[in-house]
Image (tube, rainbow, N blue to C red; front, side, top):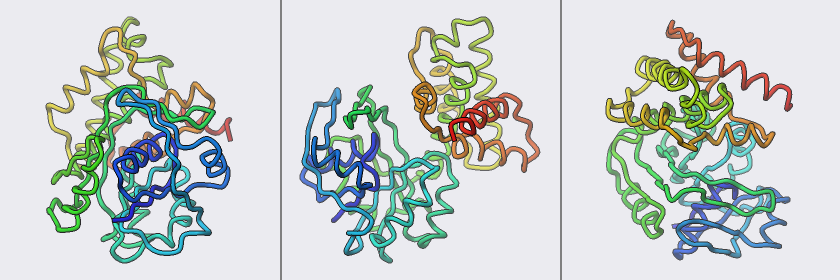
Length: 305
């Protein structure tokens, strides 16, 4: 099985490196500038699970010569359209595309660009960052790569994919409820991102303020209300676990969107917050806190542009 990782940033670089380290056939589709950096310094991972430097197999959009069995799509939402164009020569009728993107609207974009059958559900739990020198740093031991057929079936191809992924110690897990898990991930990302970006601090700092825990909890309730109306409802246990994470005393927990904002980088405001606000409006649900976060992040992104 041949895997093409689209993007060698903090997410694709990390999981692709671990699979290559385990002996799997992994190639990275990268832009010329990232290719030059990787050719000079290698693909470098710093992680609680062990550091590694690899000499990765690389292609650019112009040098893809045949379809791959699997494409792991690990780009930001605001670069999705360009990435789909770049990877098009790598996608055949039987190619499985695993999109590690935030939100849910990317599923429709990928299915429209290729075919619904190409799309495999995928959700990711990891905290990594790409340093300015090109090194990928895993910030906590957490790592889980979850995948499955969107209709919940256990097909022969998904069994083969599961065997391929389990070669590496990356927390690979096959799920028959992947669609619900993707919606649950959106609950966490939207609530955590909106809370930290709107308040301007990590969870422990917000909780320490008068009314901080109630603010985070109320924002979570807004998000959950929307998801229950427009998507696959999260389990009660997931909601309460998330509430505990968003109100934990002394926690340094923060969203990647908040870290990007602090560094002056582009943020995925539309995929994580904007799309949810629009779905809420279409369903007639008021989201004052989530909408305030959207305005804050949209204003930031507009200034950055």
